[in-house]
Length: 195
Ligand SMILES: [Zn+2]
Image (cartoon, rainbow, N blue to C red):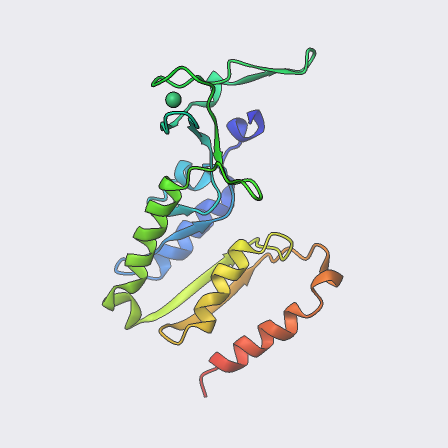
């Protein structure tokens, strides 16, 4: 938590803004983010979908309260090995938990993520988006955590969009486990190649 609280956007976020601005002022964009930090928000991006939630949003399992809790309200006593100042719900007084979707997490409150996803889907369904080519920049997405990668590739698979997928800094961890990935990707590219 403290690591996320200390994190500052690196120059890549500025470069991404520059790349988007090069596309022209009339070009619209969305960020699909599988990370749980707020670096896109901190960098000034407005349309952000966080697929796994955000480490600074906290939820109450008892009464359903969901709110942004500033990092300074939470701390860890490393000597005693206990968390201190765990946020308590203003509504019912119970202990809150981070609004992060952990694997198999049935208690995750997905209302915020669903609202973001709906807004993104409405954006993608707009006529002025579907009439034009969609450029997807997939940045730093690896096969071990394939959420962002699979989301990016769906535009290649979907005939509704004329899509260009640009893969930047692909993470190649455990590549032997994903030996067939390149073959699949090559098939997608071949299918969408303009003659
Ligand atoms: Zn509560």
